[in-house]
Length: 311
Image (cartoon, rainbow, N blue to C red):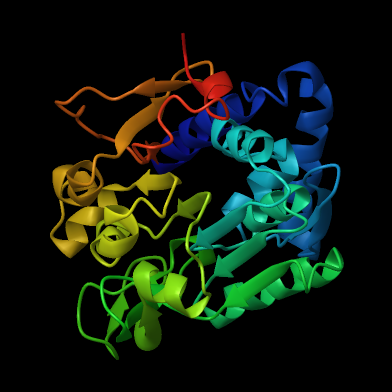
C-alpha cells in the first residue's frame, strides 16, 4: 500500500517537473539531472551550484526539496519569479520575508544594482546558506541580511525548527516546547521578531517597490504588523503565499487578506499562462498552497505592471 502511494507521489512530482515551462524543451536532459541528483542525495550528499539567472548563482543543498526543484527547473515558482525578474529595476527596493534559500533575494539583486535588497531570515542554519549564496556572487554590499522573524509585534516569539528548512516557522504556541512526529522532532525556541512597519523604520525606507512574503501560514500576522506601510501604500507590490498553515494561527483567508483589502489593495492570482488575473470580491476557496499578488491602489494600471496582467 505505502509503496503504491510513494510511487504515485513520485510520479506526480516528476510529471509536474516535466511540465514546467523551463523544462518542456529539455525533458531528456532534466530526467538525467533528476536521476543524477537523486543518486547524489542518496550516496554523496553534495551541494551543487546552479545558474539561477544570467547574473546570479545559487547553492542548492541536497537536503532541500525546494533546492532540488531549483536544480531541475531553476525557477521553481515560474510565474512569480518571472514577474519579479522582469518587473524589478535598477533603483528599486525589494524585501524578501522568509528568504530561505535566498533565491528571490538573488533574483532581485540580479536587477537592482543601485537600490536596496533586504533578505529577512531568522533561522541560523537557513541564514548561513543565504550568506554563502551572497558571498558566492560577491554581493555583500548589494544584499542586506536581517536576522529576525517578521510578525505582528516587535519582541520575541516561538520559532519551530527541526524539519525541512523551508517549513520552519513562527510557533503557534509558547516557546521551548518539543513535538515528536512520525518523521522528525521539531523544537520551538525563541527568536527576535520585528514588524514590517518597524523594519521600514529601521532601514529608513519610505517605500518598498516589491515585497515577497513566505512565512508558512503566518502571512496574516505579517500584514497585521504592516498597518502604517499598508495605510500609506508604502508597499507597492506584495507577493505572498496563501498557505493552509494559517489555521494553526487561528486565521482564515479573509483574516489574512483583510488588512490588504481594507487599505484598497487589489488582489490578483496567476492564471495557467502565468498572467495576473484580478480576484473577485468573493474570494475563491483555497484548498492548496498558492501565491497571490497585492497591488497598491496607486500602482493599479501602472505601465510597469500592464505587461503582466491578462487581457
